[in-house]
Length: 167
Image 1 (cartoon, one colour):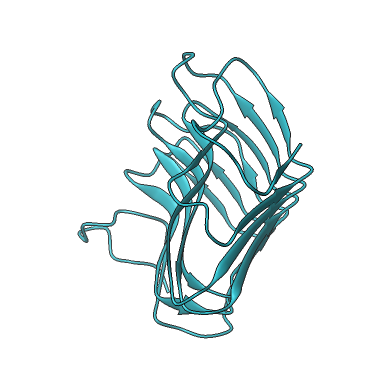
Image 2: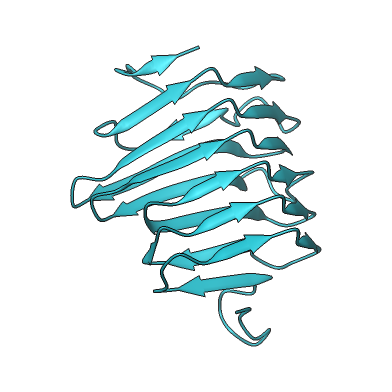
């Protein structure tokens, strides 16, 4: 399931075009790109993983994802990401009860296609980077809901209005 080290992704776990797979109880550290990188997956689950000393942690691309109880101990760059969601399909991606301490952006919702939705719920985000980092960075708002997330550190929130943001 992992990508070879000579690939352009350079991550610990690469998941591509699969359905209903689970990645759990993995420890990933010191990578060149991300802990977990995915592409057009359906109904996969990431749980109980620990990711540290990577530029970014989790990229969730597809639909129907569940990512919960993962720990991101640090990212190595101020442009790093804790969780990025890109929807391709009609299901809901749900990221909940994740704990992230990082130098870049905490939660990122990048794109939506096919009518899918994203729910960020009960995540804890501590930012340690410079003040130009973001707790969350939402590039689209359609289909986005965030509920009861906790934010610590000095950073800014996403610019613009959040139609479904509940702090």
